[in-house]
Length: 280
Image 1 (tube, rainbow, N blue to C red):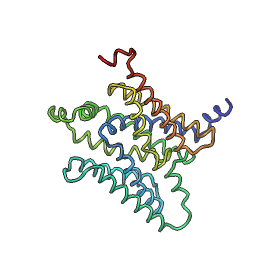
Image 2: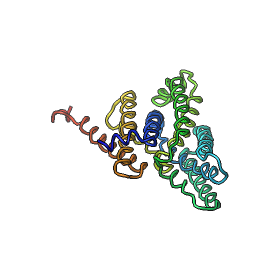
Image 3: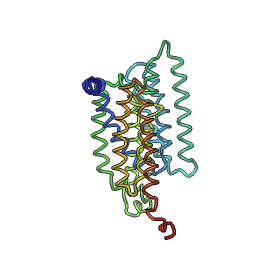
Image 4: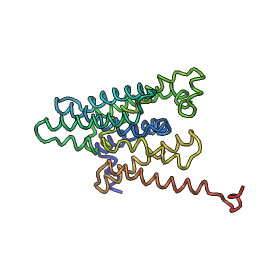
């Protein structure tokens, strides 16, 4: 009990919990619309390629995450632009961006003299690295994201469920698409200090994938996704603090466990109650 009370009164844990709640809500929302469109791989591509921005920030001084956010936003716009290109597939471009960004980042880091402990933090996440400036940025981005989701909600739902119908209704699908791609890209970078470049995609992909196993509608999937995103993130942080584990991997493993539980729950829910129901 003393350990838990100490945890919630420790400044860096307070920052981590506040930041993780906002990240869980945002990436849970983005995941509800990105994963059904089969854009989950984009999360890995953007987060890994944004390491180039982090490397630039470390090499020349300044705020590495701001550089990474700029790189991620540019990648998001490019991917949104080429999504409908018949000569290029989105997953192939994401793969090219991932390789190009990571390779450039490694080369830049090799040219930067001295030991670079920050790089490990950005790769795997660290509770100690989260500052109040990060929280202030998250609060502002969180507010803007919720407002834009409110404005684009109908279009996002229709384009996710029935893309052709949204075009017939004359909805501004282009604006919604750019918001989804660019917003997701920046949200991923906002969570790098918590889960790291390598594992941040887990917070976008796994909560919805888990919720989708045990739900049958977009609305119920959204509710369960947010519960899994928030609950899994907090549980991972608590495990990380109590057992002195790396934060990012702890959160990711909790999500994997929740996904497996949802798969089992989905099997039970869909199983016929009576034997004769198999033949109906």
